[in-house]
View 1 (cartoon, helix red, strand yellow):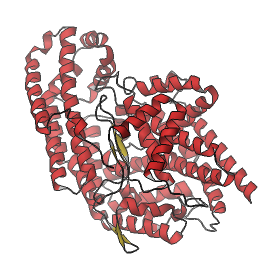
View 2: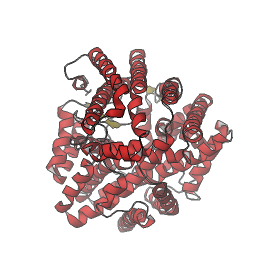
View 3: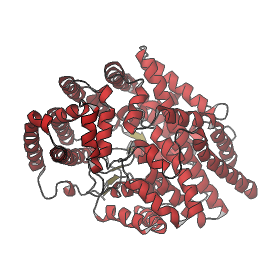
View 4: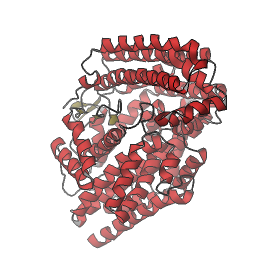
Length: 577
């Protein structure tokens, strides 16, 4: 199953869209000389022209990005991606006079436009929020052009190198996605081989990957801290997410203080699996007495039923993604690993990339990505500037979908099946909360060390220290895992992205608790949260359901639910013994 990209063009050719965006930019540039005399009505007309240019660019970028994901080794797809990136940079440079003009307005004049802007209000307020960090027009243009051959080139090198990796195992050549499935095997030799082959390959290429990462980090700090004046590297991401630094500090602190709960779980898992000396190779070993396969069609049926049980709106929106042919389902040579959902515009059904190999994990991945798709389809009333949810809320619907699937499976399960599902859930809680938070803690340390001139060998040491803090005396960490940070794409593509997973997972635990307590009365509140997209600050959206994201006690609520799951797993293990 492969996706249909024709819907991105609405009957036009790619070249026609390129010509159209260039023509619109030429017309838009004519406003440069008349901005000082704009009425509110004229301002909104210019703003809508700006929005239309952005929307066409999103479709072109979506096409190039999705096509490249099909085969990251394709010279044609890479060339097209570069060409569209250059076009995007050119358009940004030629149109940025408008946003720079608006950021530079006196407060009283800007407020006149903002107060009459309707749905564009939050977008305009966010532009003004960047006023202290904005440079002069020519300087912004230089940075935009620099990024093409700088940080964007670095991430393309990272992708090009790592997505070409093939692994010889059991007489077969395998992609990274295919060999990764052995990480959950019951056979320790398979788990160890999977980790060693993958991580050793990253280690062999560390002299390239390490230097690429250092370049990304230095670029991030030089531009954002030294030139723009952000307080710290992570503050840049927090500002982009419109999240107070205090909220992320509270989140990371609470995860760190509760890491012992996951250590407790790992001890339980070792007992359950009869592993006398558990180590990092055993982290994701699955617990299944019967090896059950989940074909693509089985997973699709199960996931759609899960969403229909929750609400018919969720079912219809998830089904539309399949019906439109917007899913790329199976692993292929050169295809991007992992999974993602890409909502290109608010009016086009989202696209979903999977690498389905028939495991329970793949059913949960499908539920996760379709949750993103549901979220991306709930925002049609927003503007093009505000339909994307900020990163901390972007995982809400995806993780909630996994919770729904888990509860559906548990409701029909025997005690043995419940144990398997709880192990899957708790493995997921660790991976989505603690692991992601510790990635960010590593990034904070790495950015600080790289500023002081750290080598990539020092980064390996930092990451090994990070892992040892997570697992302490419970789970020894073999030396090869020091290369694991190089294996994490988000660290390279989107610095400090990963706290969004911890944020989203702990948030969903609180929201699911509300759903259990309120039943159907909760569902409309849930869809209201999704429908906001990125049209309000996350703190304001969540305050409507009584959540204060700067309060450590809120984040601790999620760990109370995890505590219940650990206790239930202990009860079932004792019952079975």
